[in-house]
Image: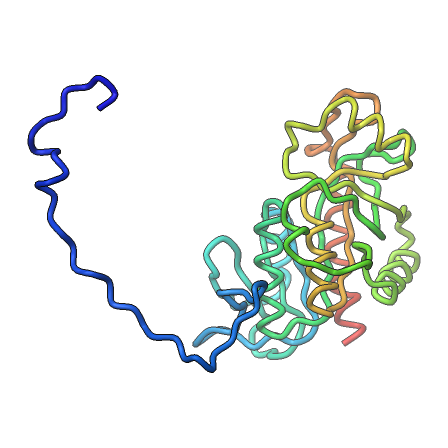
Length: 272
């Protein structure tokens, strides 16, 4: 085969004949739709019941800091964890970390199955606008999907948007804390090393504020599952001049991440 010598031991005639697989009969009364899913997100045995409020923390260092603010009990779900305040069932839950739309969408599905109904996403983003600098805060209202997860969640003619009421609560909290912020559209990508000159230039010209890796998928899943979702992103780097300016070690950036995280915890506690 293909010009290679075939050892006698490879001859198909000498391969063992396997017995036919046993198949479970399907009832003639059982009906399936072509878009029915095989795996449903659900609460498993010994998994926690979550209250309605949850904070999805994208970045590991932000999650580590926030889980140290109070005694927390953690639940391991493989690629992410869920944390609940000890002796406070039904209160705010924290979940994370996540990398990209597929992971974040899977985690959102899980925490919804555990009881979450009002979710805020806390993460980072790269600025596409000259007047949006490292350390600034963005509230994403809408997202342009350049990722592959959203299309698996049909939402008809609805747009990928965050929840207006939850955005309003977030805006009030930021204003009260005197933390400046911008709100608008973000670009969600699966491939940070493919943020090309043409894409950055085009999205900048359209007024899109920033680029990140989760929001469009999370907005779409939230709409599909009929839960409320908002987001707060801190600008960690800048791309608007077609060069990569990193601010991950900036004192202002670190301070703003701490302020934003604390604000979100307080906001949910006050709302609860």
